[in-house]
Length: 147
Image 1 (cartoon, rainbow, N blue to C red):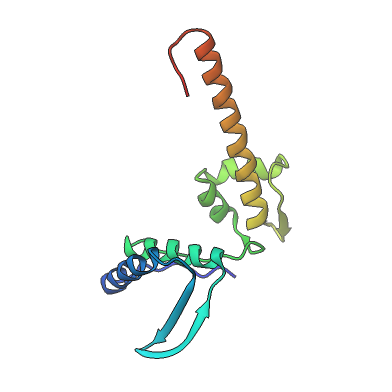
Image 2: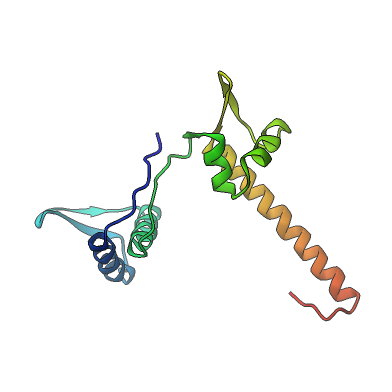
């Protein structure tokens, strides 16, 4: 279940900035965790988890809210539209057109984050291909554009 994001306090943002600066130079993902100033244990983080931790701390340091959502989580149509940065009615057209997998719960639609991110990946790839084609055409026509 997604956890609703909350804005970090100024203190949390400053602490996150210090943590980002300290961790950014780390050559390996070995972190000693302390809770309320008492050392507990050394923990080895997988590289991917370490990168996610750094990204999360960087967002907190900038005063941004952060939310962690498992890939199999289901989101509402409004949340899905927000992820894609499109209107909810446009998202509904994508769902009804079979572009994004979803299921119905009563009269409501639910979209898995996995299906949503897969659509976004495909859509972004299609946009890049079209842009490359247009750039090549513009260059061939002598418009002076080069990628």
